[in-house]
Image 1 (cartoon, helix red, strand yellow):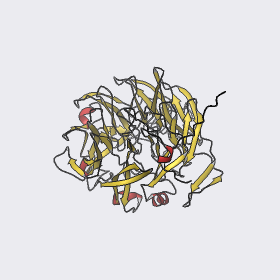
Image 2: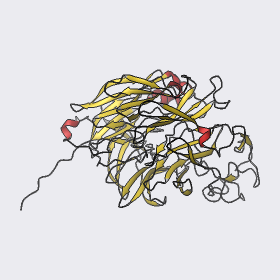
Image 3: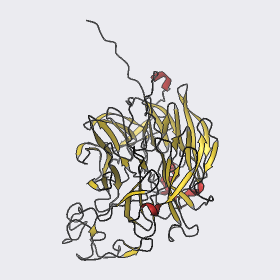
Image 4: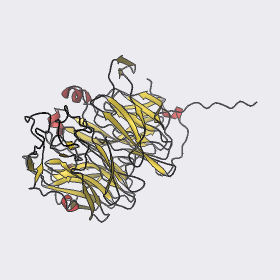
Amino acid sequence: MKIIPSIVLLSLIVSPAGAQWSQIGANPKHTGSVPVSAQPLLHLLSDITYDPFVPQEQAATGGGLIVHYQVPLVDGDDVYMEFKSGQYTAPEHWETQIWSIHGLRWQNGTLADRWTALSDWKPVPANGAARWEPVFHAVLANGSVYMPASGGTLLQVDRNDGHVIKRINPFATVDPNVYVAGVPVADAAGNIYYGAFGLDGADPWSKDITGAWLVRVKPDGSATAVTFASLVPNAPKPTDQCTTSFARTDPHPFPPTVNAVAPTATCGAIRPGINAAPAVAADGTIYVAGHSNFNPGYGFVVAVNPDLTPKWSTSMRNIFHDGCGVLAPYGSACRTGATLGVDPSNNQPGSGVVHDDSTASPVVLPDGSVLYGSYTSYNGARGHLIRFSATGVILANYDFGWDTTPAVWEHNGTYSILLKENFYNQEVYYITQLDPNLKKEWQFKSTNTQACGRGPDGNVTCVDGQNGFEWCVNAPAVDIRGTVYANSEDGNLYAIAQGGVLEDKIFLQLALGAAYTPISIGPDGRLYAQNAGHLFAVGGSRPRHRAVRR
């Protein structure tokens, strides 16, 4: 497909306030929505490679692209995107790569690459809590770009030419064994929040963390770090014993016996999730997700006051009763006779896990309640989406939450929640819309059976025979009309209208096993999607037909 210069397709559009996509989920609440109509999916306006290592990454994992990527940040004609360079050695040595932010701008119909700002950020060491390459993610605030850097610091970058204005360090020194955990976010006042934690340099995953913090950076660059433990007083102590799972060698199906008791092990200190981002409500409350270092099954959603004092922390331990005999069938997934509703892996009620390979982040809903997508394995590794009240009470849950940060569409005095929903065992894949009580409103099923690829000449060829394709977007986007935009592992970007009706789709590039490829909408309605390490700009204008006078 030929890339069409956008200047041919677009007329001047005045951007409404709040239309920019400045961070993960578009805004501090992470609602993934903007008050503009997205453009039709008519043309690829741009195709830029930001990850040159995709072929090597896929070869190393048997075809899967298990890498987390930044959402394209958009403000007017400016686009800011993560790029990778350096060397790719192997999945267990992802630190040999170099991460940077590129400043792109639409000029004469072309998305031009104007500048590069290199970071000394490195992900946490491989072969530990994170099996998939962690996310490197910037945020736009205060007229600057802020990107993660070494030692749990941020680099403030001039958004016009990419030079580093300063390094912001909330700690006494720059310790390379301290890592930015997850994604920095900015509130409406320009304060930036992110998690950080320290590891033992010689033995990062067998020894406990050396510290964990929630960091706030004010617009003037002053930074404060509060200990994560002080925000979660109900977390297990680092040396406490936490329940684990039955051993793989124990008799199957689990539990090994009807009354079996699962083993325990040291919990470890509480820390933020490796890929999770904080969210900030309109009243300044900050929401974060964390877990005990050695046991992600002891997970918490935590509310923090604007002055960085604890507001509440709610444990997700033993809150589900839909395991054996409900979502885990007796005789196959669960031992016949086991207690109704228990998680077969430990013979206890199910727990919402803060998984370190998940990018799921809190979402603040219009009524002040909060969503979090937790992981559970007993329901086909689908997880559970949990809704908390503004005071931390668990209000409802939905049987899918794995690695998803839902979008929110406000309409007619209420709102709807949009998320991917994958049935991995059955190979059935949906985009699902829920009401505020997490009840299903509609679904759109992926029915494509063709695996397609775009060659160097731009031509697309397809082979039939696939069983289906997962939705890999993880954080969909929704425009003012309620149209949902999501990209799939089949390589297509989909526009799904209200009611679950396919409005349009356009092929980008096949990307099987893609771990995290979020999408954004610019203030002019252009869409920015990604597959296979490529950033695609999509849009266009349909011809206007002159009315016929009678």
